[in-house]
Image 1: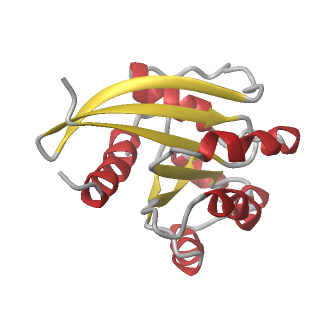
Image 2: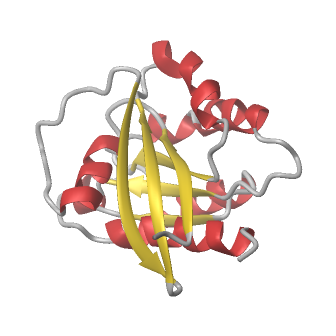
Image 3: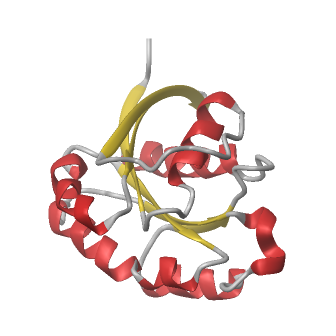
Length: 175
C-alpha cells in the first residue's frame, strides 16, 4: 500500500544522461551503452521519503527535437519534473527555456509542479563547461525549485535527486 503515487517527467537534450540516471536509480547499475530513447520510456520505482511510501512513475523523454511534440501529452497528470543537462556540454543547458516553455504550457497555474535542475555527468568535472555556480544561477533565474549535480557512473547524488523531488511533491500534497 502506498501513501502516494507520483508521475514525474525527466526532460532535457539528447545525450545528457536522462536514461542512465533513470537506470542507475532503478537498478543501482551504470549502463554506459544505453540506446537513444525513442519517444518516451516509462519506469516505476518505490521509495520511502519522510515516512511516506511513494510509488514514482518515471517518464524519461527522448531529448531529440523531433520527439519534443510528444512531451505535452505526457506532462499532463505529472506532479514534478527533472530538467537534466550535461555539465560538459554548454548547449545542453542553453535549451532550458525551450523545455520549460513546453512543460509550463501544460501545467495549470494552480498546480504545484516542482522542477529540479540536474547537472549530469559530474564524474567528468575535468571537462566541465558549466560550473555549479552557473547552474544554480540559471536554475534560480528560471524559477525552478532546486539544483543538484549527480553522476550516474559513480552513483553520486542519484538517490538524492529523486528523493529531493519526491520530498517537494509530498510537501505539495495534502496528506
